Length: 489
Picture: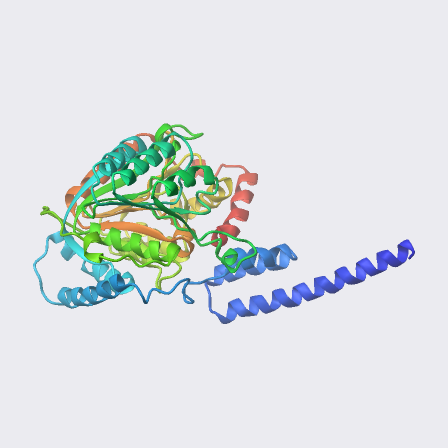
């Protein structure tokens, strides 16, 4: 066979495959349009499919599909959720009736009702909440709570690493398992990608039940769900005390990362709300193991008497009917009258949240946003910076945190409402990740969080519009290109 004939056949087959690819890509684009997805996301994926032949389709198969309406797993066997559904309906009826609640609750009735409807987030009044602002104190408190466990330990973390902190936790869990305490651990298979069998095997040998969330097998159908990760951080000990927030199990949450000290926000909770941390963990446990635990009452012991601290524990993920976390943020922003304070390490909001923030600021609400001065993701950070100009023009005050890396995910509104959890102010947290946040309707806790916010401002640089507009053309181009990717991040 001559060289020219080989070239002809190569060109012929390549062009045939390329034509077949674009026919397939066109069908996928029509499919996305027919499903009435977010137009911005549809346009972004269309660009990827057209601009990157073959690779674009692979990216879409693994990263682009929306499972929210299709349900990733079936929860019909979870009796806990049926009970919660009934209780949420009762509470909705109760809130429609005239009732006497603290002012912070009365002003938040629409948010509370929203979350009862969209995620069955049960409203609880009697809780005790302690705030931690760094990894050292958080992980020390978590270890102390686990060390006192008598019945069970339920730990869920996006990241568990085989480092000093990770091994301290491992040794503690093994010791408690030897004492007869039930120990269950969930880690995300992508977030904990480097967690080896060498780390997991001793835990299993000592009776610790440990399982990855949505293990990724590229050749298995689960590979198409690689983009849907469990970003929750939950610890429940004996059903009496719970922890949740932004801190994972790894050294950098104590010692800091490449950018210096690590700032984060985590909560220790006692009271009725712990039952709903437990319900979320057990739902995730059923997902990863397909096991329903018996003797359910022992996992939901009656809470100790606590002073009033009204709150809701809200879970959200691609398995739910509604983007609950995003809707909670949106509702809180649009009802603000005086101020909105936001801390997030990653800011790539959807159009609804972005419009709500700008509208609030233009309406005279004092809107302040703290993000890190440097980020561990250059693409996401460039996308974040692409929003600065329009936010600054709307009067939003943007602060770049310079004392290390601020990983907190916190929002405070008007001194009486606060949201703390694992969810960033970005599309990934709103649409793709399994997340958990705590909505707190308490002036005392909110003021403490706002005090920490003002302390963080002291370590931050205020972005001025005049200074920001002087950045280089290359920076502006990078940000514009990253902005196109924001719906896909």
